[in-house]
Image: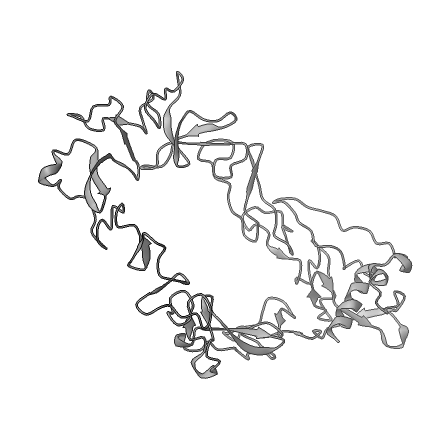
Length: 394
């Protein structure tokens, strides 16, 4: 029945001026309502689809929502903005009827409620499975950590072997520490044993002095291997090949004679900076060097296409209501309305304010009116109609 209702609505789209394709307008754009020409029945999309619908049937104004749509009040009891907004077949707050809510179960069941064909159904949350087939305990198995259902129902890990990320135990050469598999022989934060960190520890007596910008890394399960500090926003190198006495003396992030590595020299006028995680000189062709926020350094970007630096460093394209993410084209910001919305008032401050999928004053496009006095709703960008009784039109 629902299919036939929407098939009839498709025919209406070829017959009524109110049934036009939804517009996608840029901010501030306007458009005129197109003219109407009765299509030839042999080329009608409905006829091509093989539906038994007579394109010459007279259509009249309809005011009742076609199933499964309905006009349901909000949870606070207020009326919605437009008629026929609620789909009773999949709305968890109005499942099968207005205000019939699919209520969430206790978190211990690991279920999330959905509405399918107008009926409330529980489905397992991601990562959880109902392995025992008992409804009373819901989706009881976490296959990423359950030793008896590791990765899938019925997969048992050997005694004493934990299930980690859906696999029994850790790969050879690694050990489970805090739910992760690590190499105790070289992991600076689990050196020799779980939780033993080399960071900030004084050198052992037989290791000698620790020189500037160096730390003792984990080697063979002990914090004893002197290395240059390379972490966060610190990138140090030993470019003079002499640890004693200056340690790792070269700042590879800022030294234009040793940019990213010893001996890499920047061209005159270029700077050395962190470019997306790798250190490089200057910028690529077509990019501009912009000053970063404190603590993050400078960066390169294409000001012709970067919405965060559109036309100039730091100029961010605004995000308007009911609009897609703004884009930058040729150094100018451009925003498109999301489907079923339009900028009908031409104002930038409220974005794409019109819901052309449901607004009877702008049904399918700006200024296209349904019969407001009769209460004719707008559904899917088309003014709702029905076949006329007695073959007359209205």
